[in-house]
Image (cartoon, rainbow, N blue to C red; front, side, top):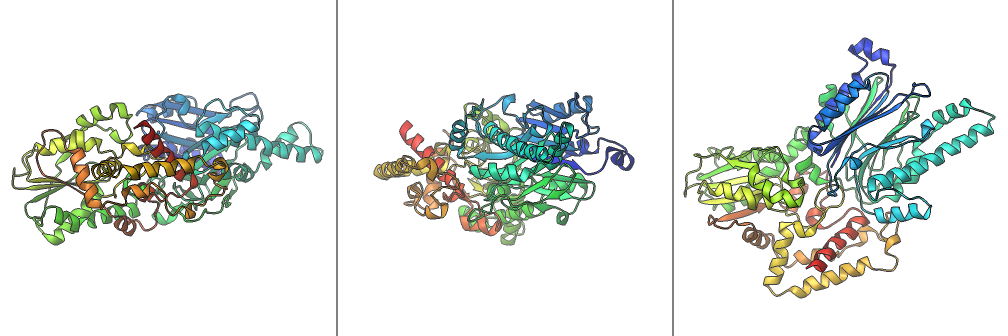
Length: 591
């Protein structure tokens, strides 16, 4: 769920100086685009740019990276000091959101591959997580390559760099066949590199969710969306520049545009701008089966000021009114409604809008306040419990002890750490008649491998509740059977080729994925009750209820984003099924 931003200028530098009063038009806009996507990454940030007119012997491809929550400020301070705001035509920026637990500068985008030939220099950044990196690594090794770091970022850089080298060499042969020599050969190559050839020979190897962005030293710029439509990207183009971002409102705010000005990338489509500034939108990979854009983008990650996302989040809250009324036994008059900051705020407006149809005098308060701007959701597990206990505080004096129910809505409940270590404890200080915790997302039952920090099935409170219920009811044999089936899926003789994107196993053919059988014996309410038992802090005796969004409600609210694998176990790619089976097998074997 990283953030990406790109700008390609289409006019000479003096044009922007005359019209906007500065040659730094692009860098200042890149800064705004990145600040507007700070929600998508606080672990690190990086920028890069290319000066296509720079003479030989001087730097023409610049990069700055930094770690930490102040990384954006640091890299732009360096950029202005080094004059990156002048004379460059191509700019890219990246905000890092780690899903691997790996830290350090070597993992901060953009990644850079150097070469003495301008056209062979490659700079990459992206919002991606690849699920079949083992197979791709093996393919590189068989070619004789030896990537320095075992990560999807570096392996992708090496594979794409290899294909870029082949594209340059193809043009070299053509140039020499035409009788060109010396610098004329180089100029021919720089002017004829076709990035679509590089993408077509690179990206079909990968299974995963991605928006891949890059630029070459010769002045080619590109961005591409995965063929399943898992990740999102948007662009705006006029005769002065082309701009790309992870979210639509970023472009609207930065360039003062209306929604209709912005275009969303189609699944499998690339935006390419060549050295001459000509833009094309080739279909690199045909969409793969059912298109499944990630619904978690809408529920949690994206900024809520997008018009469609704002409406969808309100609908997610509105649709929960009936089960909420049931949870408070119909006593809406003696109930206080609130939310857990900050991403649940829009769903809260929808919830209160619906509750006012039940009781026009419904009571709403900001009960929970977030003291520290820190996402425990993305903190390393070793520190998460301690941090969670200190992130929130509570507003006193608005709940009548023993009389009022207290309803708080959150965007999702993943691990339950924050609820158990902080939220329930501080809400209990108010001594309400009952506490109802509402999730605008359904129960998260299955791991994600496409860019969200939810890859270990054992972390999920819904999974823990499911296993506890199975054991309570003497159904250990079902757990054993599911493990055996998952292990069998992972150990088939032709597994490496079978699980590849272009391999033998189709997602549509995996009708009875073994992990789904674990949840089949139980209703959502039974899982809710067991989760309450697991989440209840020691010493808290107040009645607690959980209310989750339904799958049907999710799809009704977000009809254009049906990607729901974390709730249903219906993965969009073969690699998702393989890693989910692997995650469960790892849990079983460790226990």
